[in-house]
Image (cartoon, rainbow, N blue to C red; front, side):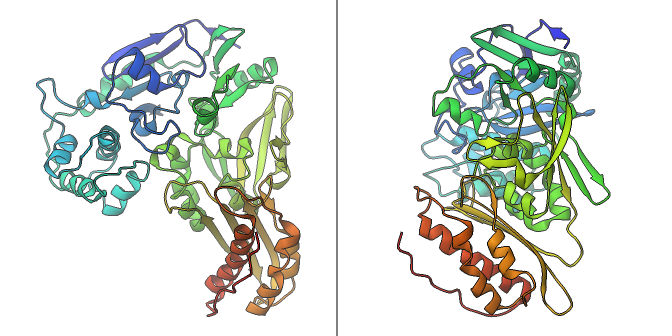
Length: 491
């Protein structure tokens, strides 16, 4: 493994930052506020939920420069090598002239108490950079990860619509005018050498290649791998956990690929939800619609499908549809590679079939055969940016006589791991796809799952909802009309 003594290098607004010492769990939010006194970036929730800490992070993607909104409260500073961090202080001109996005927020009264305003501005500025003529749906999607308790959102949406409609050709913009210069500066910083910082008590590693990652894990099998930090960040900000060593892989180009293949797509473990959205939506539209509700835009820009799988959370939203589609996971280590079906990767709560030194390198998702019916349902207390109470994925194949020839049903939030409903599947196969069959099969959910009661939902609610989702799937695929069955819930 080639070591670099240069430390972490990135650009903050218009200045290059060089850090030769850094705690592995130091957050970007603390660095901005405490070290650089850039206090426009606020701490609201410290869990990537409210968006008050939103900043933009620009990264090289081939020869292009892509800017994405991220949550600074759960983004670790060690993950920023060869990036451009942009805060709200950088938007206005040197003479104080506001950027059009900022001015629109003033003109349309998009701020009241003002605490959340910088985060909204940065999210809308990210949209300004990426889309010339956004629709209202685009605007609302951009703002999914920003919460406000004062304005009711409508003035903010109107401000976004106004600035898009009156977008001037010649306007001061802190990124557009220096884009080529930033690309050159980041290209000079970027390296395939591995960065290693710290001591035995606090070690930070940024591998340059996938082979370097395998070697680092061979040396430190107990290390915490951090891709998007949308979950690991909360281990630090909420649970106050000390992580050591930490290996950051978000900048690892070897893991950022989407390959269209015969029979499916291969998704690198470092691909974010946002980057995977188009490919997944094109092949599996129901899966794509669910991704639109996974976190807010900032979380989707940071979080990765590989991380969601590797983490093994029982309420991760991508494993149920991936299991229903028959996905497999490729595991790599210094000793070699192996591939396992995704459903068998999850062993028990907090346990995955990942040997010491192994990491998730990629996920293969087979194509959906012609004629198969597929749906994904995310159930949460609020529609956008909320963790699921349960998430169900359904896939069936029917013959010409409307008989179920195969079935794959998987749920998250119903057990200690993402888990198939094998008894329900067996109750459907070789039966006619009718309401009578579905109602008979609903009882098998009690054999497949014994969910817990927690603050998101009771066990009874989860079972009830899973049963009704199967009926919903029937209605959507068969076009029948039927009332949802009401079950007596005792828990």
